[in-house]
Amino acid sequence: MTPAPPWWRHAVIYQVYVRSFGDADGDGTGDLAGVRQRLPYLAELGVDALWLNPFYRSPMVDGGYDVADYCDVDPLFGTLADIDGLIADAHAAGLRIIVDLVPNHTSSAHPWFVEALASPPGSPARERYVFRDGRDGGPPNDWASVFGGPAWSQAPDGQWYLHLFDAGQPDLNWAQPVVHAEFERILRYWLDRGVDGFRVDVAHGLVKAEGLPDLGGYQSGLGDATYFDQEGVHEIYRAWRRLLDGYPGDRMAVAEAWVSPAARIARYTRQDELHQAFNFEFLKTPLAAEPMRGVIDESLNASGEVGAPTTWVLGNHDTVRPVTRYGDGPTGLARARAAALLMLALPGSAYIYQGEELGLAEVLDLPEEVLQDPVWRRSGHTRRGRDGARVPMPWDGDGPPYGFSPNGAAPWLPQPAEWEALTVAAQTGQTGSTLELYRHALRLRREHPALALGEGQLHWLPDPPPDVLLFARSSAAGAELICAVNLGSHPVQATWPGNLLIASAPVSAGVLPPDTAAWWSITA
Ligand code: NOJ
Image (cartoon, rainbow, N blue to C red; front, top):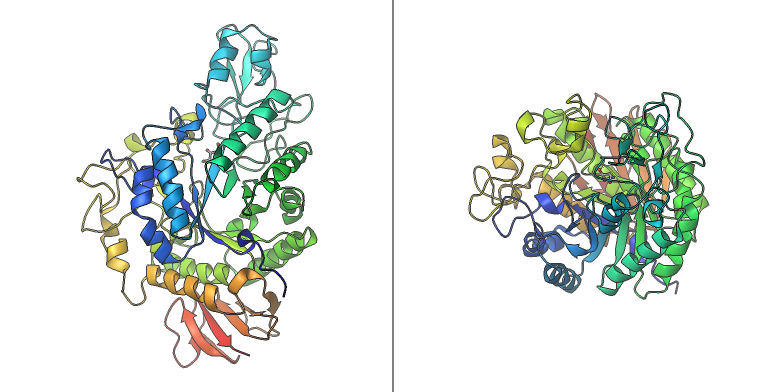
């Protein structure tokens, strides 16, 4: 008998934005104790693992992606005892825990950076970061920050330091062995505390182009600057893979690397590198049959070439929520539900960002005075940023804070009045709700022999109706699951065999309405 594939090859991983998931201490911000209280919800939803966004000591200039101490919990989120308790309870509930690792930059409040500012140019303390003298009275080169404005700020003595993100997030210098050693220490620290894996922030950014060349006015943005995806990053991941392999229990790491095409992404998941890389190409592709089929084929081919699973993703805390991206309103919701059934029928691993299972839309009308994303400030108030995807979860009740905070405290971002019908309580047990759709799909994915363990082959069925994605997954023993997604504007008649298992909108007499996905089963 062949051994079961490691869990991460087929896992469904739920992203917990800790700040917005559950607030146990009633200060309006989510915390680790709040996640711990809600573990039964996640176990019942049927996911395999949680990825926790950063909860480390941080001035919170960028939602915790500005880390001042990688080995401690920020008081806003709790204590080390809270994370230990959360890991233990999650494991007892059969859920694995992935934590965020932020190796591209530290916070400017990190002791290393404080020491660097207090030390002279050229000193070892400065060499841990990217300090340079200016050019013609300005910054050393023309690089722009991903968040807007220049990627350089000045130290009090006039030297400049590089920050691809906020000025409070100075970039580390990965040419220095001491930086490698420090992150290996941090990896071991969390592995020893029992985490199952890491999500590697800006995995494509650690190594900068030799000589820091000008980009010639190239507009930066997440994922499209030439200062990313340098060859040198791969050596770092080879070292980390060796370190992870030294631990028992299939520990893993997933790369956040906004690079394209799929073949470039796959390089992060070669056999001796990281285990997964988010498939942002899938997220970015318009929800239409031809481009979707193209991106699915390209992704499967590219990851297949390196023997890695494909890691599907429809949203996260940095991107506009799928309901809104796919058209907002009832159409956007219908299409997001169809996309979820599509994603969960594909081979490989999949990520669900908190609130997707409730069909939450992006909150587009947050008042300007509550916006906290540094993108808003750094873009000179021209880009509102990502707060609209980060509004705290609605659990129950008929108005804010919808059970998010225990004593009615105002959440750190205001929740919309329309969320009353979208709370976990309102959707639980309600036929046709998005939450029940996810619960059902996740159960089928675990139980159906053509989907379970994620390894069943995908093959496209011949002659699909126009604008319909139509494929089968088949198990080695011959069980089949057919998935059809109607992305056109007309209903289509199912001409394929099988028993209807689940549909994102009612399917009667075999008619699949527009913006609908469904699964049929043919058991061997
Ligand atoms: C990617 C993270 O997901 C995002 O939230 C953050 O702003 C940047 N990396 C910088 O750390």
